[in-house]
Structure formats: structure tokens, C-alpha cells
Image 1: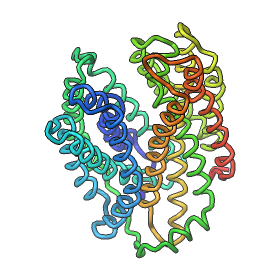
Image 2 (image 1 turned 45 degrees about the vertical axis):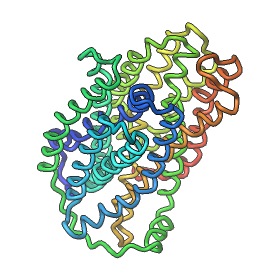
Image 3 (image 1 turned 90 degrees about the vertical axis):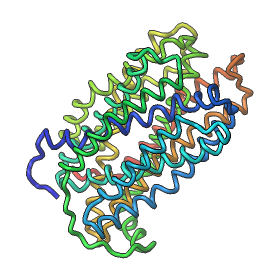
Image 4 (image 1 turned 135 degrees about the vertical axis):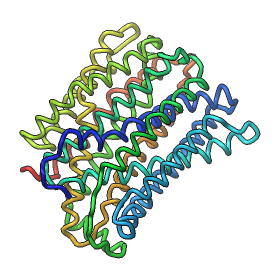
Length: 423
């Protein structure tokens, strides 16, 4: 644990891994399902079901990998061994996913989707845990998490832009191939640099795990469960429009060709605003700053149900303004979690990795639930993408814009129960 001021160079070294990890995420959400449905020939509904089951499986393995991260500290006084093992799993499974076995495509998709999620978790959970161990200062954890999420957004932008630069955006197999090569070229050196520079000697006795010790932390640190419940509802609110974005812009706004540029503008907006949220959190606290970003997003998303065909400029404004909240939504909750994880160490048991495993489990559960909820509700209203009725488009607009606002207001109720450590 470092007490001296963190240098800008050290913060950058910590954040580097976020770029290639973000590049892995985008293909799985955008390109992979369509690739397996069109190029490989699996029914689209089956592809969706396989990916949902793989994601659901991953949800429940995250606490286990958090546990392994803590055991790595116990045996090696470092979380790096599990990260190194995860890097091999990630590289191998990503390559396998974009080079499917035509004889067993469904089994191949399920097996390597599950593996790539596992490899990603083995790196990301210890990586997130570092933010609570590098420094014990309130402001430092904000800076570390903000910087990491800034580099995450940069990684997403790289993944969005690279297929257009190489003129392969219309070919899903070529897009996945170029993204894999981009990931590989960035991941290997950046991962090794971060592993070499980031040195954390924890030297804390790690008690044997027990349900009682976990219960004890949640009992003595009730703010933790309020934060996690609020984070779940807010993340679900963010995941719904992310899931439905392509359908909404194609069928409601009817400007499918503009989807790429709007996504780029959205993420650029997040980058521009992140320093402001960082500065504000140092002045009024992370909780109040997070509140402000949530209310800003709600104030513009409330107008989504009123959008119609041709309202592209209004949709761009909504995307830009809601994008301003992106950085705060990504960085501040995890920074608050880092504060609370540090507090939890006062209760004898060091289960930092497990707590961050639960945190990533909540993230993935909200993403999986958003997919299931979206398509179940749309299916109940006989939604058809080829010939949607006006009622089904209204439901789509509700799920994309109004329902997330309701979820964010529920999130605020729980977040309000949390006491900011700066207060």
C-alpha cells in the first residue's frame, strides 16, 4: 500500500491493461453473434441462447475467481500468477472463437465463449482489486478508477474505428480477425509492462474462508450491500439501451448507417467529461458526484419515448449529453467499492478479491438480465424486426429510454443509504 503521491506515469502504467481488455469486450457484444448466425450458419435465436447461458455461467464463477485471487495473495503475496494464467486462457479462447469448428459449431461457441469470459475474469478481478491496494487515499482511488475507465473507453473507440480504417467493417469474419490481431499486438506488451511496474506487497494474513466471515463483513459494513444493490439497478439501466441500441436506431430513428458515428461520439463525450467528474468528486464526494451524473442521464433519456423516424439530430443530442455521464458511471461506483473494500480489511479477514469477484458478478448479471428482459418483453408484444407494429415500437422506446430512467431512480434510493467516506 503506497502512501506517497501517485505519479502520473504510475497511474498510466496501471491503466494500460484496460485498453486490450476493452477490445475483447466489443466483438463479443456486437460482431460475434452475427458472425456465428450469418457466416457459421447457426440459427440466431440459438446463438443468443448459447451466449446467454455462457454469460450466466460466467456470472456465478466470478466470486470463485475472486477467491482464487485472494488465495494467490496467500501463497505468492501477489495476484499476478492468476492474471498470467488468465492471459493464456484469454488469448487462446479468443483465437478459437473466431476460427470455429464447422462440425461442432454450437458446442464450439459455448465452450470458448465460456472460456473467454473465464480468462477475462481471471485478469480483470485481480486488476480491479489493485485499485483498493495501491493506495489508501480517498482521492487516489478516484484517480486510479477514472484513469482505468478512460483507457477502457479508448480501447472501445479503437475497436470501433479499426474495422473502418482497414475497410473490413462489412465483413464480420475479417472484422473479428483484425480486432484479434489488434488485441494481441496491444495486450502482450501492455500487460507485461503493467505486471512489471505494478508491485504491491500486501503482507496481510489471509484467514480461512467461511460464510460467517463474509456475513461479518456485510453486517459490519452495511454500506457495501446498499452500494452493490444500487450499482446493480444502475448497471441494468445502462445495459438495456446498450442491448437495444441497434434495434432502436434502425427501427425507430431509421438511421441505421449512423449507428457507428453515434457510438463514437457517445464514447468521446465520456472521455471529455471524465476530468470534470474527477474534479467534482474531490470537491463534493463520489456519492454526490455519481448522483449528479445519474440525474443528468435521466434528464435527457426521459425524452427518448417521444422520438420518431427522422429525429436523428435530437437522438445525437441525447446520446452526447448521456455520454457525459458515462465516465462517472464507469469510474465512481468501482472507486467507492475500492473505498469499502479497504474499510473491510479492518474486520480481520482479507477477502478483497472475493468482494471484487462479487462486484464483477453483479456487473455481468445485470448485462445478462438486460438481454433476457429486453427480448422476453419484446416477444410478449409480438415484436418483429422485419415488420414491427406501432405498439411494439412504443414498447421498444419504453425499454430503451423510460424504463432505464425508472431503474436509475430506484438505484438512487439504495445509493442514498451509503455514507460517503469523505463526508
